[in-house]
Length: 548
Image (cartoon, rainbow, N blue to C red):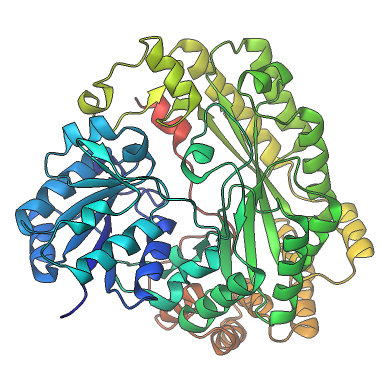
């Protein structure tokens, strides 16, 4: 008898079908799939964003899985309920599951809104899905699967599943990927190398979902994932989406040493807390290819940070951001406004913080309340969040404040961020200091070359990229940046020669492959200009609020 097939599905909400971030497959589905497939249980993942009912029904009937799990967040709750209803119509005998933070923390309401739903996977799902698959394989026609730890039912729940301590045991998504409707392999570049967060921020549900102790994958596991993604898909840029990537100093240094010795020459970004970095870590990270680092600063007022129970202060924040600029990496920060108790003087402190720290990227969002956070629980206990809000409000979020103050603050901070971004580029003197301190570093050359290009100093920019090629002939980034520059200057034969080097070093590289197709057709439409690396999508928090 064949083991049961599990399908893990996701869809962006209808309001987000055109949004780059919302239509990406959640990172976690790849790890769930790896857990099952590495143990010989078949599993597929599907991105059903933008698919209509008829197309989804035909797809599900053709696949006929025994288990269908839907990845549900607060923002896609309505669309997830639709998928579950369609799944029941297409596969009447399948076990239908919902997983993710929204059903984990709001189980009763989700069951009410999803009549077809059989069970909710509580929190971290790998061990629960594996246990369910094992029970189905052993006794396919029984209800033994209902005794799997980590499940929530309409009338009760099984014993909770303990957090998985050995994250290496999950497996590597790139090694087991079987996906339908995955149109952009760049989605695979978003990686998770740890789980959990020690912070107690009252607006965040990470500790409640993943736990307050941080669990790490080994450096060897992460390096293997990077290598597989390079070899199978040509990926050379990665984004580590751990909440606190730098939390374990020894592990960071070990991983950076491994990346430098690997010969992969990736560029990448990450995020962390402002009290969990130091110059040693940052230097090692830049030398290993980190060009952009984000911090959840949240606010420029000490008083408001205390209201959020952030656990950090502005001294931590200024020191961390100053260190990132000193080492010479692009800097991003997350800020929140529209907080209960926030005054206009507090907003001005955030604006001053932006001005002083000069981040190259600043994501500003109104405070939203999510299930699983202490702030959400407080609002519900006080009767300020109605029980049926999520049922009656479409895809809407619950904002802590909906008033003129918040709207004005969003506009004001956005303007401050735009002014800071215009001044965020490193000066020639700062680049000189970085080079004197670090010696040769490909990231320094790339950022220096980009700055020179912006100023029209073409010869200087080309020299920076040429030095990368001379120092690191196996590094595709020097060739890629020089190819783009030479194409811009009309030196097309030279640009094509550089591009051929990129594809020889990183076969299948998505950007280089796209450029090769375009440059092979001289009359093709002009390519939309954008950075050759770094984040390209825009967070929608403020925009969603202002368009509510």
